[in-house]
Image (cartoon, rainbow over all chains, first blue to last red; front, side, top):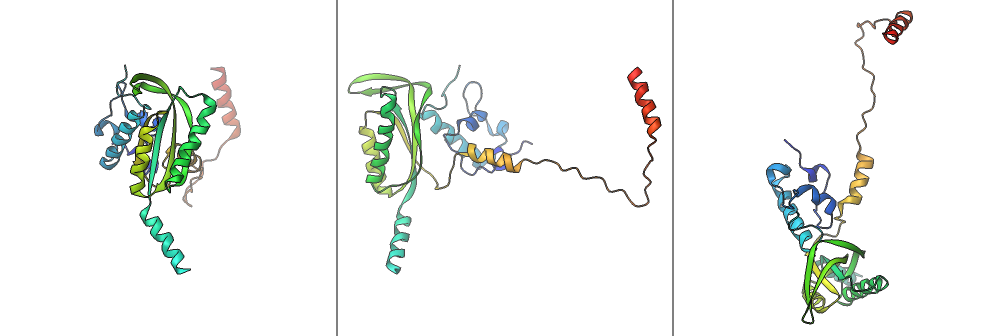
Length: 66
Length: 168
């Protein structure tokens, strides 16, 4: 099993401005990766999805790529 | 003295920590960005906001084209200045702030979020964490049991073996 990225790096708040981190959790099409692939805890996955959506709204991440 | 402390507590209890992320139109010249950034901070403080942290707007390439209608003309943006301000403010005042930002034509988009006082941008913390937290295994010589014999090393034999290996 993969470890939770956020708890292992001691990140308590997932920020929408951290595009470098968020980019790890979107696929080539710009879709948010599933729980299964990310191995992130449910709580963090929810925060992560929200952060990615905020980031998309601000034009930092794409809604669709390619 | 007691009254003062009570006031402070009350103020802190009322205020909430918010963050505004915004995109400034790239139609503004680079020199004016700083002024615009100052104006926004002033606006926040004028509404009783206590600025916690912020970042200068930086020119970024947007991930997709953002359209905005300004004065009945549709504008397309591929680049914009992205900046943010974190502040503590009374929840009722934030609505006013939103209304004011809505009217600002220089702001392409903005996002008001509730957040926490601590720094949430992980990249800096991250670098520090890897610096200090990097686990480097220390070499600890194996402790041999007392009775265990250490096999003696014959230097000449090893030399011969090495020579043989080099030749082969």
